[in-house]
Image (cartoon, rainbow, N blue to C red; front, side, top):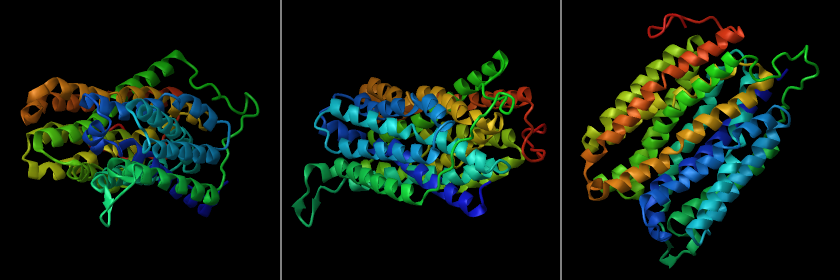
Length: 428
């Protein structure tokens, strides 16, 4: 058993690592046009592909990482992952060409892949009766990382001199932002390794004591799980698309620079610092109803956003983030509660391999979409269609809640606390 101090310390250290993980996922988004000019790229799609390549490397190894999380020290996995992630960004600051830049973001993505299977399974194990509340707190790290990365990167990218002296190439402009974020991650790794207490994955001694060693026992359970993974990848596609599309939309159609773009995009994640712990806690008394409400709210704000006057952009982006980002701890808690602890790392690894890998293709997709707009890329009405598509994807992801509930019922796993009636789903 873990005492309260150990549990709390582990929770907040996992939250800090969560921040670093998502800093590296979004730091490049407001820098697309600067990177494009510096590396002499021919299109927006090449710049946005850097985030797609990072995301592919991030999600593709998730299932093997989940297997490791079920078998070895989760503390060591988390520390090694952050170190590799950070070093990939340090190297990116020195990249002399586009090919080298792609290789650097792939290394960074591989490092990031260590985090979610190990951390999510670890927190679910430590907080079996308040999983949503605990994951909501951990999601504060993601909110902070998502918030600070575009804000810092956009601001730092404008600095190329210090006291009138030109900075070295790797410290100037977008490269300086990338380098400093990478160094911060290296320092974070050292502090985590010193402060964190190990919490090994559960060991499985015999078949009789661990009947859930197999991930899913029946084809029906696999069907429900794969269906949920694919449906929620539509949500992930929309979420990633909103970030990259927002960057290009604001810069092309409304003349924002990198700093203004980073400031606007950071509004998405600022509001989620409130909604993640709030709805994570509320969801412990009824997951599906709260998740459905949040997804519907997110879809509405996505639809409205490109139609609004520019003065309303920060408000709408904050509203979108308030609804959308809070769905993640709820869905993750629901998934973790639907399976046995001994397979949680693998289940979550498989889940984000499918959903995350396909969903994050949206960075490249929206870059291609905007490229095909050509001269109309400066007309805000040209973006209505793709924003409508992203809103539709969020609504379709509601079906994922049905499949997750199906897994729990088939596995005969009861909710950890007595559910309350929720207006959007009286049966939850």
